[in-house]
Length: 172
Image (cartoon, rainbow, N blue to C red; front, top):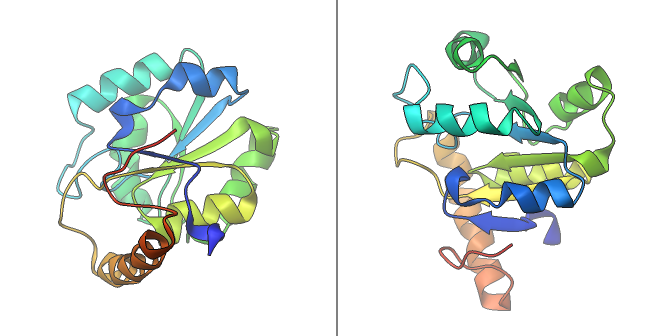
């Protein structure tokens, strides 16, 4: 069950110590979109998130990997001036493989940040890159995500019983 455990867990993307990631050799940050960078109802990137991404672009290659459509992703990519992968099909690793090849990255340089254990974290752990889980920004999800959240709840309960992971108990 270790495949579902994030290497780091933070409340949101603003709580992550990016300087520490840089010291660890991370050069590429791959963010999930919905409920990680913005709410599903957001058509555009929130200002606070936009400021963070602009700052991070000075030290990192910043990408978005989303299971959502190109149409949903496009406004964020244009507004932030970054690249991204739509229809990533996480927990498939295809989007991560694509990013690694396109940008000539090493796995040890890559980090995926997202709000779902059974998509973002599982994909990153399967690809053997650093994984950071953040709490979802909102309660509204895509329909398919509702099923994922139920599976995630089961996994979290198993982890809690074993003392491996607990929601709200953040760590680096």
